[in-house]
Length: 46
Image 1 (cartoon, rainbow, N blue to C red):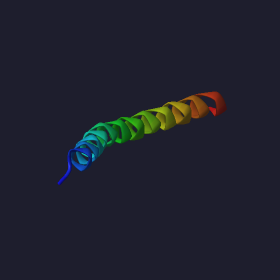
Image 2: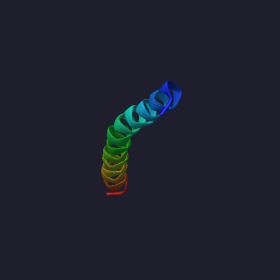
Image 3: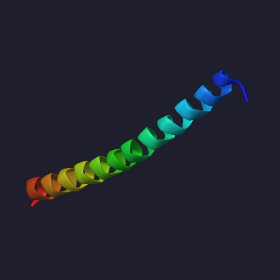
């Protein structure tokens, strides 16, 4: 295995390690946003 391949593979795994928590965070943020808009809508229409 060449040094270039090893570096490419390492950077890919690092990218995956970073992307997973970010996607999780994004999902949590979207759910939070959705719940807030729902509450606001209910308050306004009530």
